[in-house]
Image 1: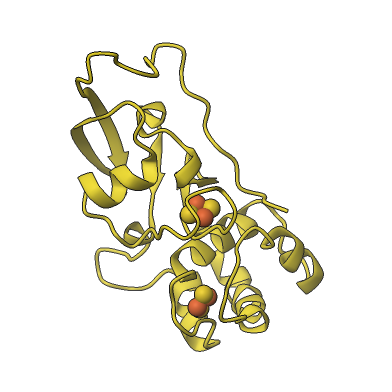
Image 2: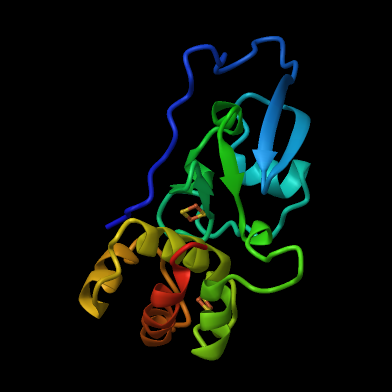
Length: 178
Ligand code: FES
Ligand code: FES
């Protein structure tokens, strides 16, 4: 089951411009304001990767099935492949690139993934980490069974699941106040 959500388009957002012109959109990503022109049908995933050059967020299925594209919007995990970029105006977005502190210190969840060897090819890892942070924040990481249930929307073709669960267990107590 997917525990990520998608963002509904705000009523003021025109879903489509018949003349093909681009829409001016203000995005706030990792604490930085971006003013971009984009097709109003562009997903947040494509806007992050193609307009802002933030390629840490991965495209797996592009259909809401794998969780590789998970980012945080207003602190909630969201599938960016199912979210219109234009609909996210006014909401702070956090991607994997925004987790490391200015001093280069990794987020406890990033460090735990390294310590627990929680990846092989790494393609699913940014989505796993973003989802894991939200999972802890939601209070859905009390035990391994709960972690497996609430991380079930993030697939890993390398089957690193036991190590991913171990990483979340390790990071959980260190995340208070992060
Ligand atoms: S790329 Fe978004 S869920 Fe797979
Ligand atoms: S580490 Fe390869 S898909 Fe998860």
